[in-house]
Length: 269
Image (cartoon, rainbow, N blue to C red; front, side, top):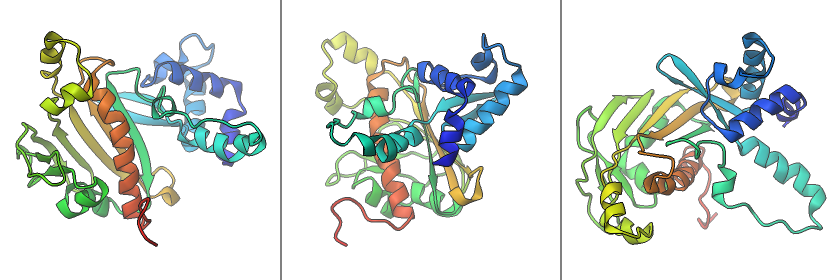
């Protein structure tokens, strides 16, 4: 936790975190506006925040976008601050608050996690139906994972794989996997409480995509860095975006547990 405390000790770095909390996914230029610091100084502060895993950077074409990662802050709160406040009961925050500022203010969801595995094993876990069945709880995709191939989806663990219009966009073993996402299905209408036919008809036209980028972590001891980007939503208020955000956090956490040889909640020792 020392890198986190070091990163938070500087007021300029805390200001950068505040800016990303207000609006995540900013460029170096956007973050530096009005700070009275040189571009080089902002870049150095961001490097410290990245090494503490408080900020993660994702390349989009020529741009480098910076996202707040609240997980280390939550760990500090749980293991240090919470330790000295146990006499005062604190309700656990809902997942929306835990992820606040990370991506929910943009029409996309970006999540970064570090896994102690190899790039090859991680890619296999993203494409092997038997492994997917384990960490997705019986749901999930099935495909030949060739560019242009259909990605069939199992909506019910006891059901069959269905053709829902998903296609593989990119498939580079050990590096990158991307495919289009299914539209809202009939079962989602009641789940997301659509008030009118007009609202529902508009929502079912939305077509997003999910991308998994695999690369070595900046610090070798962290293992492999997995960046999950789910984008292409019509707006930050998208019901599908709302639904997949919490779902992906749970799925990727289970994926990490599987690859690192841990046990799932409720699994016998």
